[in-house]
Length: 415
Image (cartoon, rainbow, N blue to C red; front, side, top):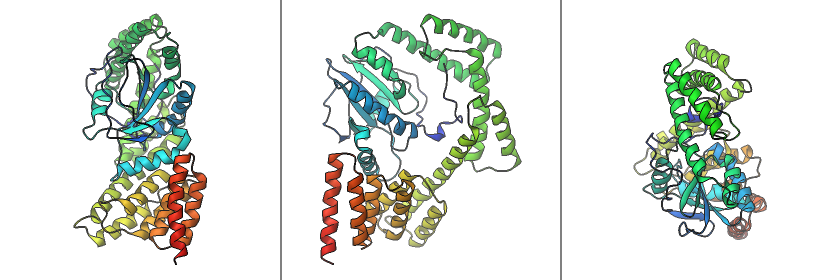
């Protein structure tokens, strides 16, 4: 079974759960559907036994999640009798509800299905993801007649969902594949720990035989023991390099780790691109730390001088991720935790988000307009709110932004 060939750690866009034995398996009754609130679409009261559901777990900051959202929308349109629910389970930042709302609004018709947030006690995370032994997002579950029939990455959903809807899904084979996938994961873990090579080769031969017997443990991705072991060596080297970079280390030792990882990189892996992503993520981690400290410094019993210094540090990082910049600006403008609002900083961050997004994202344009309005730059606020309305991808978002625009225009007439 082929693993995605990227730098080893989950740091480049993954959400990792603590390891736990799976207690939710293929064919088991699906857990309850519980949410803290519905963000988009009519509320789904529960999982009815005569219907089919896709429950997908995601977060706004997760790159692979964002990439899979349009694909899920295509499938939702293709199978209108299937109820699709996007369950947000792992938000960062101090104003998560607002972050999710703006993200979903910005996606518009590209995210055309029910969207909800997990409960305060993380019921969905614990009883679905963790119970099923799923360690990263995005992950989708297909439920029919109250049972979990399939679990996997949303980009691999089309074939099994088509079979399920057509009544051609082989549940027993799916169970066998689920058990086989668990064996493959155990094989990977043992290989990553540097297990005995002779034992690994023997187990790999058994998995190859099982792969043929099932017509593919992962259909279309034949299990190849030698390829897996080569990949593990690369991932081990890549993880060592990544860990050093994320720890902020530099110099000859890190250079040697990079050379070793490059030498083991499989054909087709663009290591230069991955290195660039890693360095960007390193900057993002630094920014998250600085911004968390900033929010504390502008909160109750805050420190204005420290806040000013942290604001300078944040801008000095020269962030280019539009979503992150937008989140920070919106937090400064709206979060109840922020007691000292630096409108200048919020405006500059929001403008950087607009530039980074090419001035095409409604939610980001709306944030910039809000920053301008709060800064008494009403004419410019009207200008950018009009752009936000024009960029809105769905009628609900357009109507909401149009209401804000009227507010700004009315304020402009009284000046």
